[in-house]
Length: 440
Image 1 (cartoon, rainbow, N blue to C red):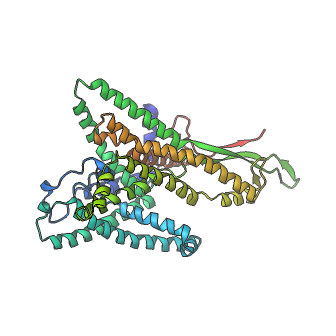
Image 2 (image 1 turned 180 degrees about the vertical axis):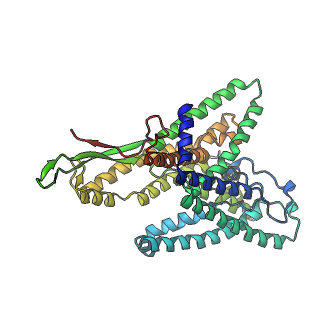
Image 3 (image 1 turned 135 degrees about the horizontal axis):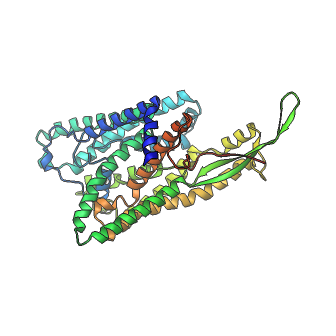
């Protein structure tokens, strides 16, 4: 406890880190306040709760803003969808590939395109949201006026959320977009916990404790796979230094490749697409039997069709995001430039191919683990856990919370170590960081 208090004092004694944390808390507070502001022209008492199903899961990710018909009802989900489309275009379209290689100017252009696409997606999703989730009896003004004004407000709210996320990334601590999603998820955990306790009652206290133990084990498993790394040993060549050209023994180091290099992004990307079929199906539910079937199947996260689609998307996005964030060719060139090599592997293309093969072997089990965690809520619900509490047994909610919290703690620890304070962990080190070991 004393070490915890000392670490907390150290964190706020660093002015830059203190300001980043305060900025982050302020931006998150604004986001939470906005999620309680209801769209104009609605009677909040006549809006039904989005309980269960994929809409309930989306409501959890947005901190209840979805079911409250808030001005932030769509949150940053349209921005995530736009980012997915743009990142796919950077792989398939030469124009976007050129932009990606142009440095800061190219990134600014890509960001502008992403923002414009976000507006278009928000307008489309806003129309679907109003048509499928807001009952007619809840609208107190002219329907056409309400629809047009609400789409404009929802689009503005999404762009404001995107701005908040960018500001958190720029001036705060952690990844802003992920932080916004995480705070929405955490806001619903106390309520879900209390509801589960009331459901079990005093007679089911033992079962409630077992559920908490199972939740703890699952969280430990998620942390384990999130922090797991595969170290590729590298050797620096012997160097001649000084006027006497004395020989200095090379050093041995490691390239730490995370088993889950994509972190929470595949889950966020996959989940941002999973609520689209049910929304589209609800719009055409009265005109098509197929639309009714799609709406029914994809409105329940316990259906095998939903879980199979989610699993495929997670695996695809895991490999895709890993491929665009880790460049084995660039790593090989950097090693060669620094007179380093992987023992037993020739420099150049052979090193690049070796890193790629290792990355493929560790990415597949990482993706499969993400799939297992993602579908656990369906099994928890089938075992009798309430719908809201079951969502914290895995899936998007748990992985995002663990991933974002670990990433934020890692950034805080980096500041502490940079200022020569003890780290947050007992060993002063969070796994996944590079270690340098001299060869004797």
